[in-house]
Image: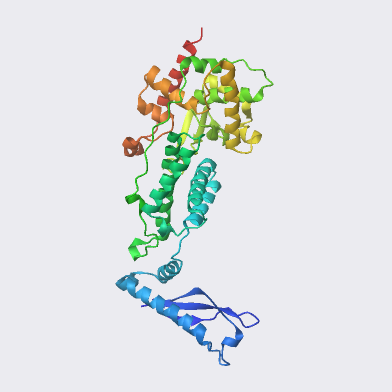
Length: 409
């Protein structure tokens, strides 16, 4: 059984000190910091604590520690001194601020370079703070009832807005509540220790709250004729934004719908191939979402304009991938107007490549999944045992690009 007593190890020149609780367990000594401070006058000449008020506070802490250790029962025999110390410290910090915890997770996303994901988390957190009317919340108050009230308020506020479609509001609500579920689960991993009976995050709001579904957005793929029109668009050299939009849209199409962030983050060029790890999923996959694409002549022609040495120059031209993507889309908006097309975005290149591959080239959907660097959940275990054969993707991409060529008059 662990034993406790008050100690005063760090005394300042003026005689003031912070009170620590010394714990001994299995002959190991640990110090637990308290928020109790003493002055020189609180001690007798013999060095004993004489201030009755402080003494009572210290005794109350020690009594509380004894009770908490007693609740662990025989588990204490299997726990180290550090584990018991952590348990007592966590018990003292029973209040976990969900807002503060979320901000820390968002900061980590920024540090990992996942800026887009971080901004989505920030938007979700801002909507929760706006609903609460304050910037703090005990995580154990994040109940199913609070979630239901939040969801109702969220949709009502969106319905009042004339600029936001209802379907868009439901998509945002689904995304935001999914983020909240992720944060709650992350907090449980960080703060709970089921093996030792430490349960600081007690709520499970999503056992009763169902994350709302929403209608899928309309397909953003373009027909072959429009892909060709974009490719063949004649743009004055001085209209740099439109040139950028056309070039990078077609480059993405020629590279199986690669995302702009993965072009921005200096992919590796080796033996006629472009190798990258998909930013969106690399931290969630055992294979780091690595992809290897053969650089076809169509892609090479564009890449030569935007390379210096062995690297692309996008990260030198733009502060971050969001600015890069924003400039591409601005150029595409202007290009769509020139071509008399309905407005489309850079992401349409990815949708278009996949749609043409399946519907027009009759390429197996599994190969298209691989080319898009997706994971088929039904094949996840099987994929673990299979060595990747990039040639299947190479053949599929060449088939799509050849079909685009055939359209030329």
